[in-house]
View 1 (cartoon, one colour):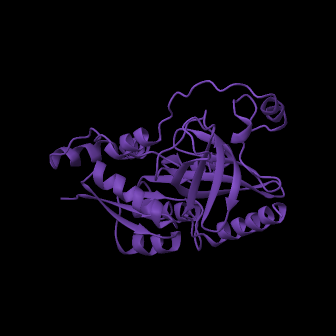
View 2 (cartoon, rainbow, N blue to C red):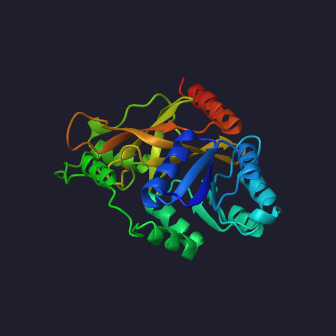
View 3 (tube, helix red, strand yellow):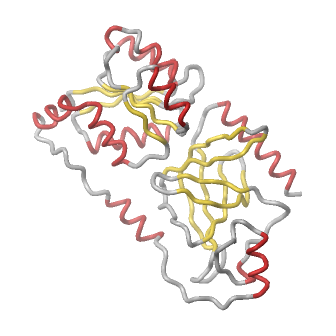
Length: 297
């Protein structure tokens, strides 16, 4: 039976479900409730008491930082652990959150183990006592699905392809291809200039080029010699929306596919499905899509 209560706040239902599933599987003594933005969370917290808050930063109506500021002004929540889970991992934002009283900071995309460690750290003895009282172990279960995904997407050693003079010249002109090997026929076809993209996962970053993008998903092409994610892994796509601004879009890995119909292909296509429901992020994405399509004509 659950003895502790946690509130999960994020505008993306996929992220809320992922956090709740991790908490439920790892800490069965914690009951979870969720809210899609800070305003809804504030309403729930006014009617009920929670022992832990796991919250996104960027949300419509009320941000995670605004919820944290309000929470620290309430006597019953002044010392309740608050974990900020966000793709905003730059130093300035971390410092700002610390000044407002955040307990811990977890960057997106995160792993279940990373989230579990943060929860154990902020809950301390109270969580340990509740787990022991409920006859539950603090040791985390093996992530069988993660292991299966790793087997599915692991790289295999391929024969050394013969160097093609045309390929060598192309590598010098394209930063994505530099330092790698490829056959002339394996170069991804492109219509006009493609935008460079950085796709972040819980323990790696994929350097790639945007092949296609819409309001639902983005398809990128990346060299095979990098570390690739598993199907359904969390992802954050960093895209340049102009004027020196960067949009950080949350999503998950929907598809991995070889660019060429051969085992020793040098390029892999990765499709990321977006999960954000924040109007501001959707507006940024719309601007990027329009600019991308104009440049591909």
